[in-house]
Length: 417
Length: 152
Picture 1 (spheres, rainbow over the protein chains, first blue to last red):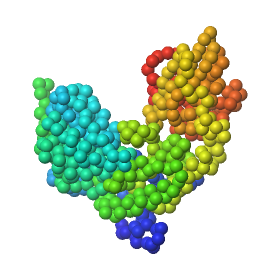
Picture 2 (tube, chains in turn red, blue):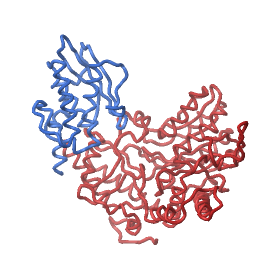
Picture 3 (cartoon, rainbow over the protein chains, first blue to last red):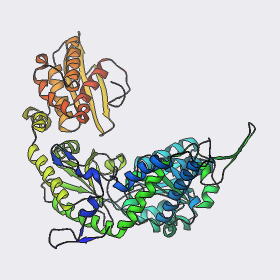
Picture 4 (cartoon, helix red, strand yellow):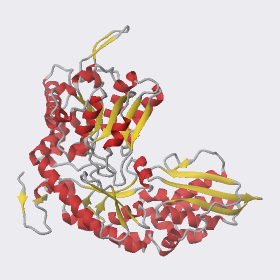
């Protein structure tokens, strides 16, 4: 995978052409038009390498892990643990045992809420999060609060959707027991100063969970440099399969936690009087895991590493800048989320046209975008809107696809005029 | 624009979306219910004034997409002055029209037939039926808001 440099002018500096060929679904036609897939914040498409890894695992290696003495069981176990090692390398964790395989970012956050937060929370304790969280980084904490009497403290955001550092520092107090913060907002595209957020929290003795569901495919994530206590992400948003995700936790944090679910593979010994739990990460992986999913995720991370996060980020910056400029030429269109630090997402409203109508109309031009509240209803309430239309980019998107989006949105405007 | 899109966004739909009829909170109402589509966040409140088995007045409040707004507007127009039994038959007919791809013409639906095109857009059917589900909930009591995501 080399970077193809092409002509100047309107052309992208880095051509996604070669990357596009890696994704078979991009050849699909929708309503007779070539698909322009701009809903990558919802889920990303899969390169052939990931599809092959899934098929290859089932065709050659499938067995249960950590159990059998037979050859296939060993191969499956090796493949599963090799995937864990790849995740470790990808996010620069110190040890593979700090990587817990879960279903996705949602389960990762629920795991921390149940096994780390709940046992430590008392009435009046506080969990700090931001006004731009996805529901999956709100509701697990609300459940933990309901069970313990703890309360949520919400860091407000600016009119441009930016993270407000002073407001955050003001909310860190003696009752703060945990900070749970997005790394990249799925509704606005805002990138938070994660390293600094962790630093300030740690100075107050508070552990931090970062929700990296969006960030993982757009930013270079280095949990060692971030120094966060927990980092959660989903495989399917980084070109991997659905149903597999990762909870990174510092080893000492994970060791201090009670199991999340009980079952096979998470125990050392079981009698009817008591069970002794396995060491990390297996303590948190009860039951047969999503082995093929982990293998597929490993292949996806290999793919991203080969392309290079620097090249991806540069290409997406250009897409966001171009889409922002072109969309803003449409009368009545307003971009929601214009923070200086943002990535990969352009959320917008169009005067007199509901986001759902925009979504349906551009779909007929072959353009897939998301319309609605993006599972971030508090963000919509903050801006006093029912929802937005959202284009979200990945490495394989092109300026031509942005043009198709802009033409579709302009058609919606003309239809509703 | 594709033919299916034209069929969905007819002039009458645009007209009712831009200038909805009966979008108000009436001074008098005997029945009321809230409806919610959690997938898109659309909310609607339907108010009815029923006396002697006849819907004297029908109104709605709320904001939604063009399909949801036009449907609520057209519905309130259709309901006004109808005996309750007849109004419930309209509900059945409307539901059938927007969900059954083989649905024959529904002359009894009159103007409501402009929304037939929504059946080509399965994800938008709930936009068209939200007001009607809420109407049903208003008639049959129950104070819990209805949701498009709980049964039919």
